[in-house]
Length: 363
Image 1 (tube, rainbow, N blue to C red):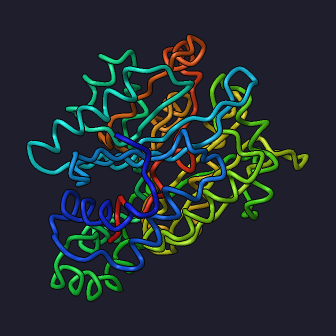
Image 2: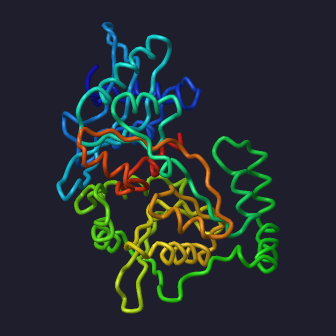
Image 3: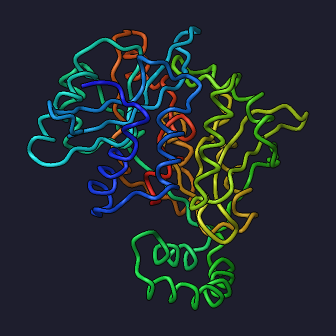
């Protein structure tokens, strides 16, 4: 077992395609370039916190684990967390190699290791290694604005055939008209913002300026004060399947920011809400205002990772449903991190998770 090097990119890319796409082929230059930036581009990367590979005595890589270092704040101090992404192995020998990689993370002491896409088989390994699973953060929420157009989105998802995509294109215009009738007959599909707050679209810099204050309500949260934020935004922007990356601020009558959000999406389609932050006690108003902004922008529906502090506010919204999205698991040798996870004072997700990665929905 050793840390991944650039010379391993081709082998790891082939392993990724075989395991997650069921294809044995030469990786594209696009995939190789993306993997290189993902595995070696993080500003928090050091020789001791990168991705791992396991090779046999013949030098053949049997398993690989992509780990993206991200800086977090724990009780005011900065630590380097590791986001565990694609866990790959092939064949019986690869399974044994994967077990060794798994033991490396769950058998040693780390400030913070986490994954928001863990499979059900992995939860036991996390807990056996002293980690835990956050059930609310393992859910995705969906708020529908235009039900017929939202249904057509399913026909255009990756993996659907050409016939499904062609049918969706033919039905899009009629669905747009029909949704207008549905929204008039059932006005609760329309989002209603807050009377006391207003939301406006801003750039990434404006979001980054207010995010630290909004995140300070938590004991564990991502440190977006430096170049880490710029890097992850650039990576999210490369995921064109999600749509453009956008930001907004939610302000009170005096122009003071009490909330902020980041999302990807194009008008008429899905809005993927990566992060929705707010001051303590303003959850219901901020959720309503951000959803109203997305509705006014013409999105068919909005989706996002559920957060413990937002759960009650989301439940109060009409036409909201929740589903399992992948287990959110974390491990730490720091008792403060474990206490924060158990007490709902741990914030990760969106730009501080795997949600933006092209490995989830591309290639």
